[in-house]
Image 1: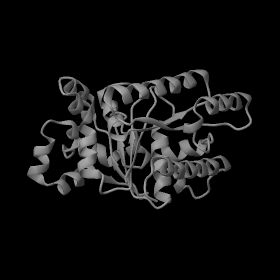
Image 2: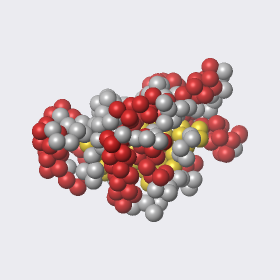
Image 3: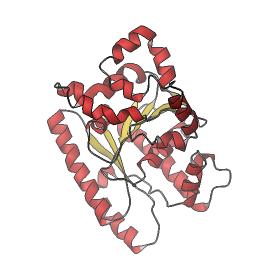
Length: 284
């Protein structure tokens, strides 16, 4: 069983991309082979995280970027695969990182996908195109598939929810963020009833956590009370090394001399990745 999860919260700046990258890297460290899919926007932040932004942008500038992630949502994607073969298409879509994990990066073409899908009358087709792609071409290739979603509610992110069903929410300690996770939990209940899918809030990960502060401790207790079954085993420590590693195009797993906070964050990602496998029921 392939582990599928989407990292999502209807708010920017909560660490969704960082969480996607580091959970994926942690799963790789635990011996699983996987791929990340970046639906979070044309900035291609996951490509930046793994030092692949420049090669991707060069391909775009040289018109060597077709097919790309936006092609997956096109009416004629199936015909494209038949003409060229699945392996050839996947070779163009998938980038290999230096950290043992594959990536399908975001693309500027995603900006127009919502408008195109809005005209699709069949609900399953409108929200299920990414799922159809994952089912057909990625399911048998990988142990896990993590999808980075933008912090807004549109058709493309809903495709990610439909494809993954398991939702991971990285959150900071604050009243606004607490309210956002409560709203997300309510939205997932609506997805489950309105779309007839087994969507669930699989894991809530306290992010940029500062131990020993009254605010953090108070909100941790509130999160534990409200989302007890979904809470991650370990909060991810706030660390400047995470930002520094990202700027260098890598994760903290590649740091030769991580700080104490980076080491705690790394341990948290590993513990949370292991728990994610247990919760979703993927094969060890």
